[in-house]
Image 1: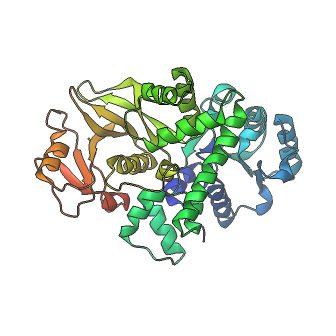
Image 2 (image 1 turned 180 degrees about the horizontal axis):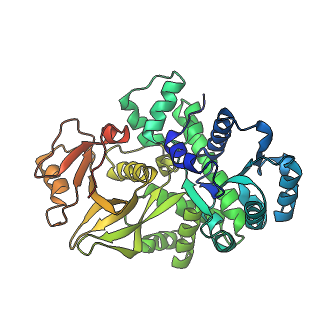
Image 3 (image 1 turned 180 degrees about the vertical axis):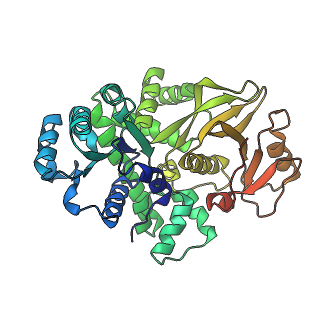
Length: 405
């Protein structure tokens, strides 16, 4: 059975009948199409006639004749046969040339509620942004969170326990990967999925992109997600293998990864000055499963895997997230929502006094009174000196929440 993704539906429901365009974005195979189908089913359950719902998957060959805005305009207007309100769903709308003109026209001239999906972050840039300023609302969909993994397993009567966190830590939350039980099969699925995304959303969009180089560099970036990226190290590694790559090309590849929703760039936040800094120094993978495509092993004590999961969870919950910078150090995350914030430090296990001092000590020079958290997999509560210790699994399963000031 398919999971009803309440965390996103709760955000979208207030707009079901609004003429504002609902733009659902995210990496391929994260569940955007299923979410559209769920919304369609909810509308029918709420009394909307099926004849007043138009659903077009623009990656379906049945619709390959819809090439540009004029084709789309003709298709939609031919399907509108009564004076009632229509609910229009356009899946992967970026395949239609100048689609934004059609959307603007529909909104201005028809009695419709529009839902569109896309797998590239430029969907809301350029001409669409100009034509539809203030007329769109965006929802980014990520692969399953750990809580959604639990819900999916329970829905399908599959065995689940909290120790499966380690399975999630290794293989991530792409919905279709749960169809496979064998590690080799999951690895093959993720590898094929990644290559498909690269082919369809990156290489096909730019003739100047060298696929082999892109794969090598992008997988390196994913494997090292959360760490401070050294472009010079990548250039040096290429030179060592008698190959050339420019810094500009690497930065270009990073931007292409962001546009295809493979990574999120995380800015720095000056804690003392309480300001966001312009330069970015960290990237986090949209799903930790992509981090191990070029290897079959994982070090479960690698804090950066844990950081990646915490980061994605915070994004899913609607936080704006930064890497916190102090005068001589850093805090893993500054999480901000509605003008309020908290600080988060992530560790694997607080297994020694030295580790405890290091993680809790990250806050020693911070005078900001906002709540401070240390998250780890320890079951014992080690909170002290006003710093709250939280078990990571409890946080991911929403047994505990964050306080903000």
